[in-house]
Length: 327
Length: 173
Image (tube, rainbow over all chains, first blue to last red):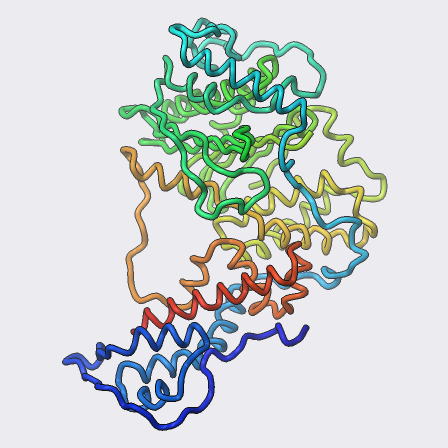
């Protein structure tokens, strides 16, 4: 397949003499104008340069440089791409005997039958919470053992999780409706709106679209945003939270940690385990440093069915990703 | 700085394999893996890729046939994950810009050079460009490394090349 190595020349070959189209030299020699330049670019990109284009370009101050530049493109691309290589790949990376199966983490394409029933049940419950005044679920049913509406970290909300075994009970993450419904309530009162499709649909296994986008109230010592990522079946398999401090003080870090822990506790599906997982967030957020290379920590729960990535970037911003992995 | 916490004892069993010390191997390979990922997806996404690599390696350690080839195996996972990374932070960053107190400021503009165009490519397109043109792999090899069909690799390669060529020419025109 060496024919694939190295690109084609984007400028096709010779042409006969033809129509030298009108060429206007612009007042500024750096900005010549020609009505044919755009079409010439289209044809260069489409690998369809005609002989008359070439003849015209030979005398046109605008089109001539386009062809000259196009002829240099492949060399420039190789040079540029080579310049981005910071590390050679180890020898043997293409060895077919390297591993049994190079395909690694793959999210489920869709839930199993039990998952569908569970999702339907949760949707029905979530809709009833959203539609009925006061809702069916009392705040105390949320993964918080503190007073109603009290976020973790403010009053010992994170209590002993109770032994439930390593497996998470129920879905790893709540539905978008349940997460949004909790976030808009006291004490945090975030604002939520519908999400949107990702820039390139179905670029990664699993997440098909955003479910909801919620942002924290203004006037806090931090700003935070939460996005749920859903499958085509509207199952939440990813919750991403980003936070930035308005001022970098211990108090603002602590308040942001509270908010991120609370968002975690209302996102995790297993209500018995949610406090433990939220406590992990609450504990680690203040310890992250804005180092040049960033500062990251992983947590894995439920025998790997829920994984958390907590990071602080070099710019000081915080990022938390909750991902439901296949069981 | 990189830390991993196995929160629950059950997880330790996943990585246990008598002939491989994954954590040590990963620790020593990590700087190299970060540089490989940075080559393929840029510095911003490199950490995400390497984290994915670690998780994947933990889950799949049983598939490693030759423990002596663990670094190549980790590098291969890194390449594979580079092609699949989604820049989740980007969307959130975008949203934070529209809420008060956002601190993000875009870099000052100027004439686009080819390296800027390549660096601005979506991760999978950039990964294919760098593997093919930077590392010099054939499209069949690129396809093998990132786990897609040859036809798909060819399609991504030609589409990306056309996109870059157009942008580069238009920047000049």
